[in-house]
Structures are given as C-alpha cells and as structure tokens.
Length: 251
Image (cartoon, rainbow, N blue to C red; front, side):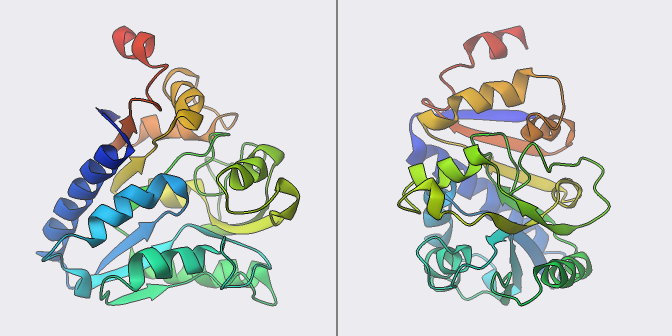
C-alpha cells in the first residue's frame, strides 16, 4: 500500500483527483469504454470537486457505477447516494453513461443481483473509495464483511457505528433516521479492480486509519484487506494521519 499525507483535505483530494485523472487518460487510450466505481460521503467531496473541475478528461468514454445505496430511501433525499452523485459528478461532466443502484426497488435482493451482473460485464478498471469509521469498505461493516464473498453485490444490515457516522457527517438528523439496510458491492468485487484510490481525510478517521495499517488482516476491520491489493494508494491529510507516526516509522 502506498500512502500520501497532505497538508489538508483539499490538498489530499486534489492529489487523489490527479491520480484518478492520470489513470483515466491511460485507460481511455487503450479502451473504448472505461468502467469506474465511485464512492460517496464526506471523504469524497474534495476529490470529486477537483476531478470534475479538470479539463480534457475522457468522460465520454467513462461508464460510471457507485458502491452502495440505502434501501428504501427516496432518490431525492439529501442523503441518497444517487442524488449525491448526480449533484457532484454526473451533472458536472458528460459521461458516457452512469448506472445507479435503485434503492427503491421492490425487491432489493434482485436489484443487487442485477447491478452485480451489469458491473461484471463492464469490468471496472478504477475505483475511488473511502474507509468508514468502523473500517468498512462500501457498506461492508465488520459484521457482514466477507473477504471471500461469492456475491458481487448484496443487501446488508448497517451496524450502529456506521449509522452514527452518517448522522455525524450531517446526512441525517440522527442515527435513528439512517435506514437499517443498504445494497452494497462486496469486498471481492472491489479488490478485483486493478487500481484503487482511497481518500480518507479528517480527524474522525485517524483511529481507523491506524487500525487499517497495523492490525492483523480480518473482517474486524475490513479495510485491513486493502494491504493485500497490488495497486492501492491511501490519500490522507494531517488530521487523518495524526496517529501514524509509530506505524510509519516501523515500516
């Protein structure tokens, strides 16, 4: 795992965006269509803002996907990931196409299976992601994370820390308002993507960043599995890297 530590969240986001832009250009030079998975949440704000502000990127070749969506949330709800990505990505750049997860589908399990099939066919080459305060990747909280999951997407129950984080970041008025379940891509799906760009800024993430780097690899902290990926870079700011001195020295 490569680690970059920047002065602040804006600088870390800009660096992650530059890496994503370079990857997009390289991939578009050899592929007619480039499938990319995008994360949402507070950790991605600066990265997406910088990336969508760049000129000359091959967005017309990009097929976009997202990682997860709450079950039963209206698409125009302020916390909807569909709304988030429309406002911060697809309305800012002209993409070839973007496939949304329908959190309002009558059968969430069937929607997960359909989305998984579409993603497998697209063969994503780049993934922008974050790490949750409980170590989750996408919505694979410790209790439901499976490093050998046979499914590419599934319906999961969200744990208390995950729901608390969503409220603390301002997406909901309280943890009680956060939906109990979500559709998420699984961890093997994410790890199959050849290049991962992880933006993890902010003081609230400093504890989990340390755990992700120093704990034994296990689903108790799902983000530890990132250390097995051959091409992942972690973009931190000084706040999220605040507990890393001893970890980095030991390496």
